[in-house]
Image (spheres, rainbow, N blue to C red):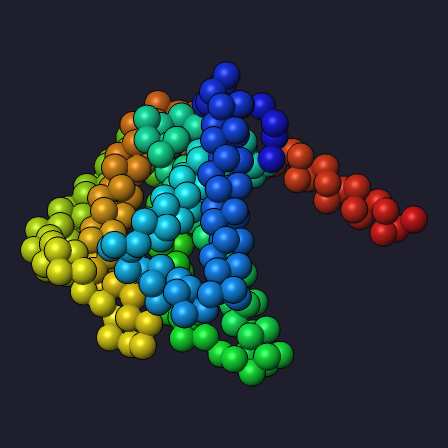
Length: 271
């Protein structure tokens, strides 16, 4: 990633400090919870209590610290541009970048959770009741947020065999039609799923297992929110690409830096 600021500018420093502060607070709270589990197991707070914060200020504080760490880390990392990422031009691109960075962070969290489960299960013979469900819960957010990021990066599946043969006006017409279909799908999903999502959220429907996380009560509403965000990003892309050069619309544009890296690698292998 390049170090040049994408959108934060002078606010990058304060955002970085906030990220470090929330991460440090979450780490200190985690150490405190582990220490309490060792010294006072009868009053310790485990993963079962972590998804039931009512009446537990320490759990609420821990969740607040984790949420703040994820938020500010996502905002901070979105201020760096990846080598293969196109320049941000749409009015909604920054929101999608922040959500995309959050998805990337959640992937790393899933790896840590599964690593913990493997060690606990096969080294200490103490499998957890929550690792598999937590990884499933987080993976659902990654899946939905990845669609948002893919739309912003224009890396979703597109077939150019016919598209490249069209004149510019016909390309605009096909792009407009595809965006209208996306918006129509989002409208239909919201229309048909809003009441069900609202019901599941208000009663915080749980998974029905030993750990019993509220996966349906949270994922179903977020599914509707995610598809609406994708539709907004599709509209943003259409507006941003409307007057772009027709020869520069492909998502997989030539990356001179990547080509140079490949050339150097081949030269090193032939020496």
